[in-house]
Image (cartoon, rainbow, N blue to C red; front, top):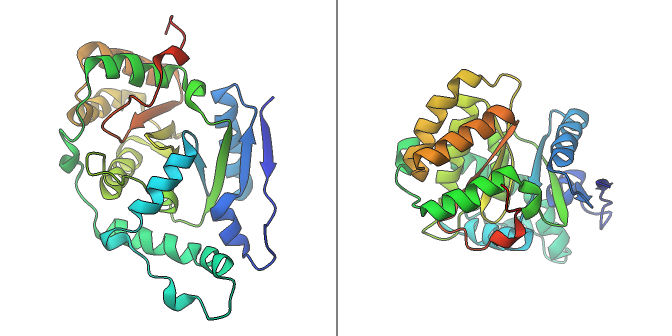
Length: 266
């Protein structure tokens, strides 16, 4: 049975906002992807206007690469002057998380790039696209971590909450700026709401304002990024028509997923 657990503060000196960014709640024992999506909507309704961000697959690796991605170039946030001598450095650092998220949002917006910069960025084999990208969308529960993490983010909109767990550390993957560009583009142009990520994947859900007639235009643009073949486009279009979510990779390889984990009939 899918279980939602609200996390308690690990230290009284930790601010509520910092705790919510570290981990507001966890979801465990879930065998149903739809249960996870239902909980996402429930948490969102109860905690608005804060935004809900989920960490969904290979969370340890996701956190590791996110840490490194946030330390590079324009995204580096220097906390040294914010931590006073004699303070508990770990707690003081955690309490700067809201400032770090705000800084990362500012940098993502400042360095905003066109979706055209992503064209041809990722090149998958037909086998990867057919056997993994399709299967992941059809059976997402197969790749979820045993314990999903939930964060609450004070951001203006849902695409900005990417700043609370930005990713794209390796040069062959979409960079944080490129992933943010994709997330923002899908939100603004196709009403696909970003709900979270893992070490390899970005997860989206349809907004109530989603327009089915835009699916062809959506996949025309996605094809320029992912180079789908015609069979894959047909299957993914049908998937999005029949379901309320879509999952896209932001890494250049998918061999971390085991085909044996998926049912043969999908």
